[in-house]
Image (cartoon, rainbow, N blue to C red; front, side):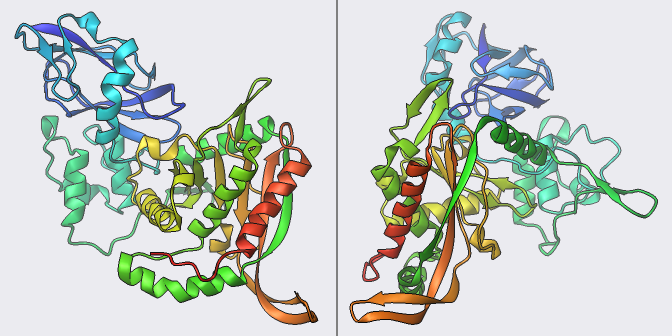
Length: 433
């Protein structure tokens, strides 16, 4: 028998550490490859960590609630001694515990972890309302899934667990949801405490606390300036109206305004690459990749920003497919760590909530963010060779917030105008698919 170290695997770009929420196995337990062994939280997602080895868990090297750096040892696993120990999921063969080190962890575990990372939680890691007295057998991930699905304590207790000591695992609860009879139940509201029948105190969930902290930090870091422009979206509106039925028939999905807006932003970034930057101390880092984050509102009222990586490599149909895919994954709590990391510029379609305009806060370490307001029909002056006319046009406000430390008004304004020009010059005869 040989002892090997299990390391905390990579969890996406820029994530350097995570917090151990729960240890899912006990010392002495048998473990198999891809068994969920830990539940951890990063500043982006909560997720389960799979074991890359088969054998026996000899010793935990981390405690619950401990902050653990990526690549550091978390457990000692005793594996079978067959001359060489092979990890079937990574193909790495080691003849000593030292062979699996932090230096190789990224290459060894990145692929396996990203493939295994199939769920996340936006809800607080607390029990559902009417929680059982002893919920130690329910992991934070299971509890958050239960809360999102409106599964109360009594219903949760009826789910047959297949984990250690009959623990309900993520697989158990997701399987139960698929065959759930009570399909019409709704998520339970956040528990509020009434003060003398008057005001209520509502505890922020973990994600809301995180959002709050990020927004305050961004305001402290960046010198926010916001510019506005009103854009004529008439050609875009007419084109979408003409193609949306055919697109749904062929693809089975909808074509929203979001991919059209993202396409215009991507084109403008190519024209003004100094908007696609970040700040590192007194240095400016110009990004080679164009990774567009898109703000998505969640059913629980929180917000998350999944990222379209290499957005410049998609045509409009590809962007439409990617937007729908990420939005669906976000609302179903199925985003992977990589889905929410690596953004270089962010957009927010606040028009979906009938907002005319807003002043969005920059997502750090980016230096700009754009918000698109509601499209409204208004009387407008139309310039023609024969003279000016008064007509009805579909108009939309765009707001562009940027970091005045590194983006001057000229660049911020020209970039905004270029996005406007691409939208107003939209080819209404183009074919989508």
